[in-house]
Length: 319
Image (cartoon, rainbow, N blue to C red):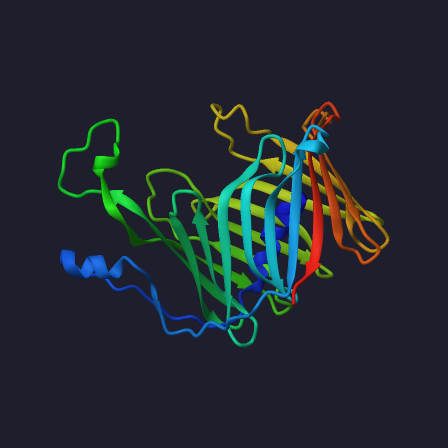
C-alpha cells in the first residue's frame, strides 16, 4: 500500500469525540448573506501552537537543481495542525494540487474538524465529526463556493456571470465510520442520495491480530466492486487488488494488480512495487529513514524503472 494511501486511512482513526453542528439558513437574501460566512458549532477548539515543522522539497527526473518546497506540515507534538500543498506530486501522474488543510482538536487532543481551502480559488470543504457512541462517528461535509445563480437561463457554457458574487456554504454529504473494540475501522458507509446510478458507498475492513487482512468496496450498499487482501510474510506485505463488476467501457481500470511492500527491522516501509495483471512493473517507490525512524527521502520510479519524482523531507523544532 502506498505511503499517502496509508496516511489517508490512518486519518480515519483520529475521530474520537462529540461534535454538534448546525448551519444557519434562511430564504431571505439578507439573512442568507450573513450565513455565508461560517458554520456554527457549539464545540470549543483548543489552539494548539505548532512546535514542529516538516518541509518537503520536490524535484523531477533527478534534477535536484530545480528543487522546490511543495509541502509544509506543522505539528504540535504528534498532532498535525496544518498542511500546505503547492504542486505537490505523489508520482508523475498523481498530485495533491494546490491547497491548505487545517485541523482542529478538543481539549483531549481529539480531531473534531478539518478544513481544506483550495488555492487560488479559496473554495473550502469542511468536515465536522459527530460521535454517535464510542464506536461510531458521523462525518458531515459542507462546502463553500460560488454557486449558480437561481432563476436565470444558463447556457451550455457556464461563465462568471452565471455564478453568485460571494461564496455560499451548503451541505454536501455525510458518512459514518464504525470501529471495533480495538479502535480499528471496520466500516465506512455513505447513504445513497441518488439511486439512478451506481456509486461506491460502502467499505468494510477485516483484521487478524490487529493487522488488516481484507478490504471490500460495494456499489449501492451490497454489490461487491473490489476486494483487497493483505498477506504478511516476515518483512513483506503483499496486497492483491481484484476489481469485480467493471464496466466494459472502463478500459483503464485493471481487473487485478498487486503491491509488494518491504519493511525494515523497525517496521518502516522501505520499498513498494506495484504490478499489473501480467506481473509487469507499473510503479516503484523507495523510502529512506534516519536513525530515529523519520522519513527523510522518497523516490518514485515509473514502469521503466526510471526515477520521476523525488521528495526530501526536512524537520525543524519550533520555539
